Image (cartoon, rainbow, N blue to C red; front, side, top):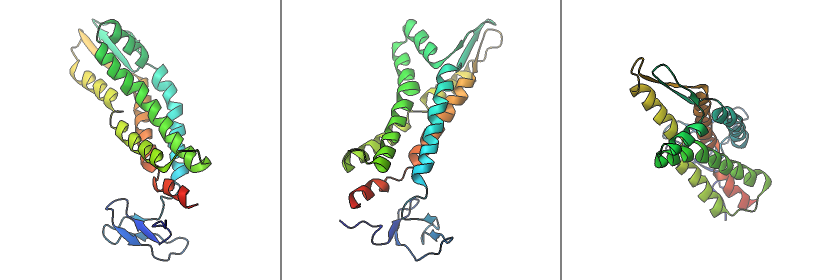
Length: 205
């Protein structure tokens, strides 16, 4: 099967228009004739950029889980909670559904998302034995679960905004929340910087 790249056709990543790639010099850049976005056969340095985001997100997972993410101050007293201690507290107080949601959104989703992106990178670079269908399913799964990554930060922001009762109760976000937010953003960048067309290239090599 002949690929679009072999025919010199490039799909604009912004508007989706399929265009014929012109002959370019070393420092010249093609542009989409419809939306004027940068046009390329494959996203430049896609694998390297994705690896950089994945490694940074993996490193930040440690402070995100070890540092306090939230402190609830009640009558002037309060203990900082990490993600896991907060989940345990929610579970012990009988809020099992909320504990499960926080656990999935804060721990399961980021780890699974990173593992899925790393798997795609390993398939492209080291030819792991996954079929094209499996890789595309994995790529779509990464984008699907990504929308739930911000749930935990959303809950914290709502708490910090609403629970501010002076000396009675107050909620403060901790440095773990900043690290966790960075993990979420970096995994989004990693998923978006990976060019799924690299998967098609494996069949043509």
